[in-house]
Amino acid sequence: MKFIGRDDKETIFSRFRSHVSSGKADFFKAVGIDFVFGRRQGPFVWDATSSKRLINCHCNGGVFNLGHRHPRIISALKESLEELDIGNHHLVSEMRAALGAKIAALTPGDLSYTVFGVGGGEAIDLAIKLARGHTGRLNVVSAGGGYHGHTGLALATGDARYRDPFGPNPPGFRQVPFDDKAALSAAVDADTAAVIFETIPATYGIPIPQADFYQHARSLCDQSGALLIIDEVQTGLGRTGRMWGIEHFGVVPDIMVIGKGLSGGIYPMAATCFRPALEALFHQNPFIHISTFGGAEVGVPVAMAVLEETARPGFLEHVRELSHTFRAGFAIMKEKHPEILVGLRQLGLMMGIEMVNPQCGPVLTKTLYDHGILSVYANNDTRVSQLLPPLIIDEALAAEILERVDRGLADAKAFLGL
Ligand SMILES: Cc1ncc(COP(=O)(O)O)c(C=O)c1O
Image (cartoon, rainbow, N blue to C red; front, side, top):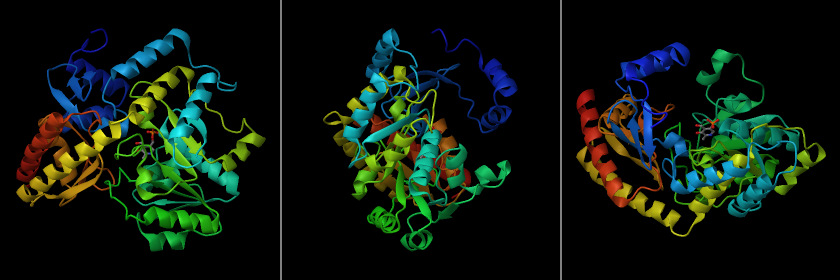
């Protein structure tokens, strides 16, 4: 291999500590996760300097929905490199036109326009700009514990601990408890530009909202003239067993944001999709929002391949079948480990392992790592460990993940003295 395994672990850690992030290098050493992302294929990733193998159940929140280096995605990029480059972000683009049309055909309702970005935070920023520009209003209501990114307006929707060190929040942002219809009703009024939610808040521990929560949000927005922004960065592209998580709730948002998985794990791509009426803002001034690399042409065939692969017959059925396997497996584990396991929060393969106290998430991250599973606890509710396996795993690997989680839970229980 040309790029992987050239240096030994000590050299990599020392360089990373000196030139990239001293805090991360020290943290991962201290917690015994001295893994260096090495060879990767399908659901697996190997340490660059040893034979340790992990099943990737973190998937960077959905980046690796199709696994690592999916053959179709790799060949899409190879073909695209034969002809394309970044393109020009000001001019009319054949590739972006084709991708915009493809996304319009696959997204709910009349979300027919797309502005492309590089990452989720940028795409959320644009969603909020669009809502403010369209409504002429300032206020944005989001969920406590929610997470939409670390960039400007996305950061402003999130929790104080991520933004307080960087100065006061800009005006107009307000949080309400997630899935609280009364609190949302009280917060939305004639000054509200947008209500923004992740369909299922991942960083907040994958709480599954009540079946009518989004219908309630939709009608509040309709009554007040606010726009409903739905963040599908993690729940989109098949993760929940439907193409888009919001489809489970029978609601069409005004703006929907896609990221992570759209990259195929190969070329960054994010999208802010919206209804035709909102396009008027850009029609008047098409240069009011610019992203040099957003919708880079060379990445378009990759995103196309992701969309085609996810929409192909049988793909979502497979996700739903796997979700039954995990549901049944966790029901058994709940009987076995009642001292630690509260239950599985689940919509398709968007899964959160809910445990009894806030120490459990970090400890399970480590014990699962020791048992060959890469996963991460939910930062804004550390009782929960996120479990996001690639959507392409087979039943045998699902059974293996369950068996490893079983052992990880037993070790976490012992470590915590539960
Ligand atoms: C739900 C959600 N929205 C937005 C973002 C921001 O995406 P990015 O890191 O690509 O800016 C993330 C990232 O984790 C996310 O999980």
